[in-house]
Image (cartoon, rainbow, N blue to C red; front, side):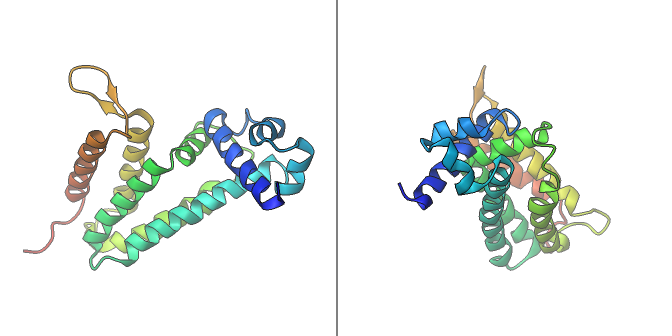
Length: 198
């Protein structure tokens, strides 16, 4: 196996383990075993656990940035941008459950010794999106507080799903539940913004 293929296997295995166990409970030996790469080779390929974790977060940020950048750049109004941002954000996180889980661990006090990840990988996304939707938000409302409930709702939906009719829960991967949640979120975004002119 060449170095590039081994590095990809290490990144994939580490992402799965960080998503399942968290950064703090994962070690390089576990990653090496899961990747099928000799432990002595892992450090040479990717550095230590911290460097590997940051590289995974950086890669996820670049993917998410490209997704949201397209939503921001391909709409002709702030209100349309808000709805495109919602769809792009929801679709990205539904289709990247491991990255979602890594961030959930982070927000539950995991990897606290790896500082500034939110400033590096979350804040730029919020800045880009808040600038684009400013015109759709009432002047007395901070656009950050329009996007924040969107983020919280999406994370809650993906983590827990929704109540099924009658009893039980329905996963975010269920197409009907996803369509229902999406329509509810679009309605919520409409209620939080200035109505379009007649």
